[in-house]
Amino acid sequence: MTEKEKMHAKTLYLPGDEEIMKEQLLRLDKLYEFNQTRPIEQEKRQEMMKEMFAEIGENCYIEPPLHSNHGCHHVHFGKNIYANFNLTLVDDTHIYVGDNTMFAPNVVVATAGHPIDAELRYKTYQYNMPVTIGKNCWIGAGALIMPGVTIGDNTVIGAGSVVTKDIPSNVVAVGNPCKVMREVGEHDKKYFFKDLEIDYDNL
Image (tube, rainbow, N blue to C red; front, side):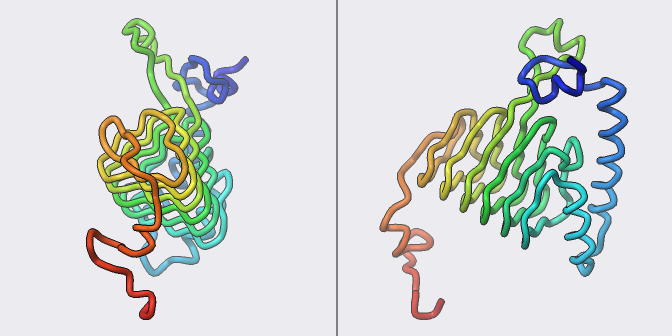
């Protein structure tokens, strides 16, 4: 098995492999170009994202700067996804994000990790575990999504959370480590922020 094949095999590998690095630098060059686009160049950004991402649906909007280890080559976005400034996608293996999900500023989604054993780290070994984020999620500002995590549909992750374990669908989860605080329910159909009610007549 080559080092490139090991990247997606949930095993230790050497990320500095020549073949991996050659492809990575070309992808990062494209990402650099994306981050230099002007705000008015929306059509250009859309075309570039189609080239950069493994998959990307319609009507996705990403605020530069966008950061990604492999230029989003291993990132699979559904449709209608919004990402605010400084989204970091550590996409050494695959990241899957469902339709209509939103990322607040400074979110990190990481698939890569390193062994606890110092000798293996000294030899630069790494492992990658895929991350899946469901549909209709909202990931709060500064949240960290760690390797191997799955987040279910319709879930809200609070700002600053560190998600180290799977989070189910239809919940609000917060904290370090991130834990389920409550389910999404009827209360959320009435109030949009604390005790402020939703005025459906004016929506």
